[in-house]
Image (cartoon, rainbow, N blue to C red):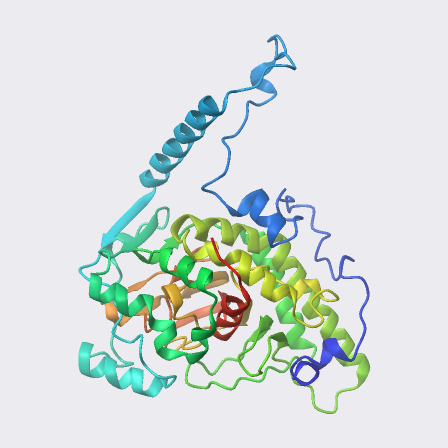
Length: 428
């Protein structure tokens, strides 16, 4: 499986991934982010992954000019330090609320959570329950018209009956969950369900970074990149999938859905090098920014980051090709120029905790709003914006668009999560 699904990695060598390829790291207008050079996983969590435990920023050098230096023996008491942290968190939360628009839903949209992986049936159900067809034009969410503000769609906490169904959903749908260790089960039961159904955050990633990714992807297509797309019920546009998952195999493996039949070794090696450079640039300059924003709204999901990172670290070949290790809590990303125009559910996303999927867009385009029939509207997504939602329960598609649109989707594979939970001794 490993050798077939990612032939370009398993059979062909490659130069050092830190080299600069085709101007990837030669742009002077890019500002290096301090966290971008940290390894994802444990070190990433310690440095910037856990915002709840972050410390307030210290005094700048400019503010201390002309002041007597602080005595080396002075130490802030733990109580004073905690008060300072609480004050900083409160100020940050108030500032964030000033730039947010909250939409409160009447109920949690979970009617499709038990559907089998058949998007044709999903579309039929939408016609029956919501009267939605492909020709329907959904209205734009009123509070989403302002591009400068973040939009948060929230729902009431689940009822006791809903909580029992959602909390035990993994065990109801997958017999392997019965093999969890007792401490892991106890930790799983302590994790709560987020009330955030969908968020849209503006100005997450600089457009210059997205332009570099788009140019490299176009070059990949020009070189003869071929993507093998098994699911034609989502989109007619193929995408590059990179990272790790165990969707098509009994064990997790490095995957990139690239098939080159009868291609010469030189071409395969060139494609492999460019794919790896794209992944490396994504990890360094884009992924940390996305994770930091998503964590603010789905903190309970990020508590799984440790067990997922441990599972990814065991995958064959991941030490040799670290650019495919996203470190958790996400395992895979899909990249394409275009959109997913057919209404669908992401059936292989985790059922457990209704984990979010991150969608980032770039390029020079108009349109391609996110259609969400269950919520009765559509969400405009412009370049540099990030949308995160439970795409396992929200049927969605993109409206028509013009121009070049880069779409990056970040997700976690459900079989990989189940495997990580089975091997974990505890979570919290």
